[in-house]
Image (cartoon, rainbow, N blue to C red; front, side, top):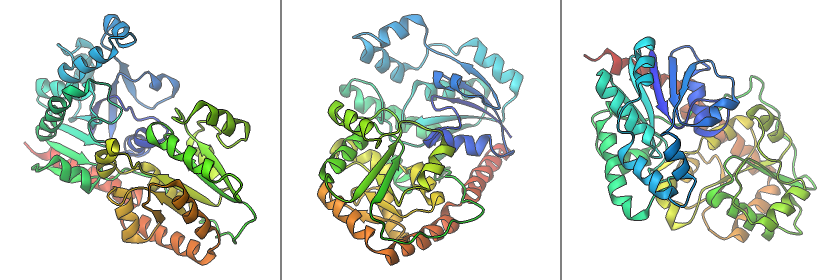
Amino acid sequence: MKLLFITSTPPIPSWGGAMAFYRHLCERDDFQISVVTDNPQILSYSVPYEYTLINHGHIWKRLACSRFGKVAHSWSHLVGCSDIPAQIIEQAQTFGPDAILTVAGSWSWTAKLAGDVAGKLKLPLVGSFNDWWYYNTIRYPWLDPLLEQNFKRFYRQCDLALCTSEGMRDALGSHPNAVVLYPTGASMPAEVPPIQQYPNPIFTVAFGGNLGDWYGRMLEALVTRATGQPIAFKFFGSNPSWSSAFDTRVRDAGIYQGQVSFEQLRQEMQQVDALLLLMGFEQTCAQIERTSFKTKFLDYLSFRKPILLWGPDYCSAVGIAQEFDSAEICTSPRAEDFLATIERLQNRAQRQEVLLTNAQKMYEERFHPDKIHQIFVTQMKQLIAQP
């Protein structure tokens, strides 16, 4: 199957959603892809497909970097682009795709572009809804009702809507062809490492992923509260949102080790005792946490370490973790309460073994990458087979 993927989240061997698509589209041989993206990050990777890097042009780029940045971004979210660039039509005609794929959530002008291309070429439109529309979206808040209306209209326009969780599908509403497609996490190692004996003198917990938004601030509160406790921390990721004073502290102490490759992250996680999974408590991110499903959670399963989950009871990760009893959960927003959860797990070797056993069951029964990929392949074949 051939897919023209028009997106701000190109499939690259990184972390998160970009890596999930890379696993579907590049590490397996069910699909051939050609990519159109406005994300210059793709230039830093050697990718096994042809791509076109596009943008709105010099005037828009200048506006976006000025005090009129919100104007430029808001305009692009609403309008997309006035005309489909000729190079994209040429690329599509040369490649001969069976369908157009895009990431529709969080919202981007490339989703509107994908819809326009699908309409012009009379091809099925497939939208992947990974995040609620306003996550990391630069815009004027007074435009929110209109942008959300566009987002939901695009969902109904899709011939196939891929929803990252049940919460996402429920929030978007009825659709004749919407399916839940969880992110694709990393595969378990061929040889499962033995369970370590606890307690250790220093219990080391680690976080790997997005350090922006509310996540960096949550980690700062946790580490600050843990001062003097026999707990060590390791953080991996980029764009931390914590304070400048805390940034100096964690860099000097070797706690924050920056962005690393996924394979290096896997190796680093074998040296720690437990893994931190965070979901935000702020009201501004409530809908995001209800509808998203973190690829990090599924990657953590493959690392074979106990998972400590800190998030509100309404978030998707908490619901799944409770169903399988696959993580030690704290639903209080107070850092001292989560710290107490960590300390309890530190001294309960049997509980750690139970969490690992249940995480293995969760992986095998519902989140094995082969099972998730097969859902994607089956849905795409059914879509393309339709007249």
